[in-house]
Length: 314
Ligand code: ADP
Ligand code: MG
Image 1: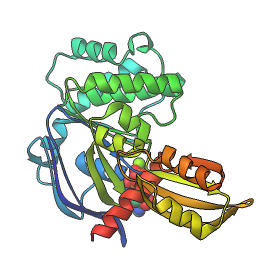
Image 2: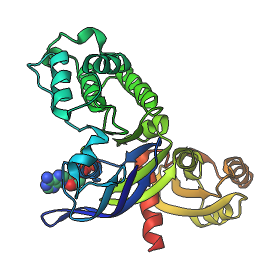
Image 3: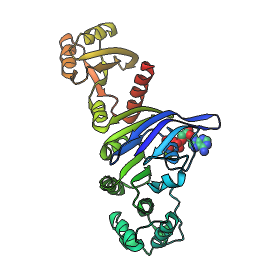
Image 4: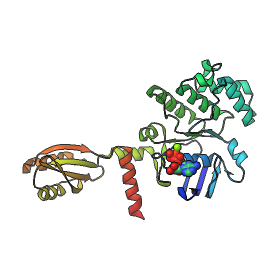
């Protein structure tokens, strides 16, 4: 459904995307994950023909976006980061306006009614968009994207600015849409990708640093392999002792103090929880642990690890 090959985008001298390639098959629901400024919106704007690439090839539903932008756009429904809603139109007027713009063949009223039911917009049809809450405005944007029943829907940060209840509703909606459409959504929240997507593409500084099934990524995150310990005792002896503990892959002293203790960073062998063994080994030698915690379950740490891996492979 989407084929991106060696995509590069420069804004002047600034390299926003560098040699990005990926494919998304029909019916997949994929998350484009990355911190702010990673290039997510740039990818989406190029996929939807709103922005031109500097280099590379982009095909949507088999159509080259650069060569046949109008045809390519017909297969795509897009919810941009800032949907172009008109505050002075009612919801109904706006959706009919979008319907006309898109030159849709489907019978107008039943089609719009079906979409409004799907995104639960029914009772606000006569309200002015400018008077709606952010959650409802987002639904109007999603409804507009669905007009014409596009095979592919692309949503840029669809839950940003919503309250927790609205976030849950939108995520639910995204999963429902995935039954009929191929869905690509961007987010800077790992938990969101985990909740909604089958697969994630991770962008960092314009480079694609991971393309993985979400459960595989989640396993990596939850593997509990990186810890930080504050331990009282002679630094060298503690390092030596910990290195000999079963399930411990590596230990370094960070050189930081935590009161009387030294702070150590410890990594465990994947799939093997070393924490009990660490506790007993230290207790036996009389070296008290005064603080301990897992590190790296957050998005930032995953990025750091993936970037580290990517750099060490080069
Ligand atoms: P994301 O959506 O992941 O937050 P963007 O694709 O919006 O990232 O932006 C990627 C990078 O490109 C950012 O550093 C941003 O400042 C820069 N950028 C985006 N649009 C422009 C533009 N029109 N001109 C110059 N730089 C831009
Ligand atoms: Mg963005």
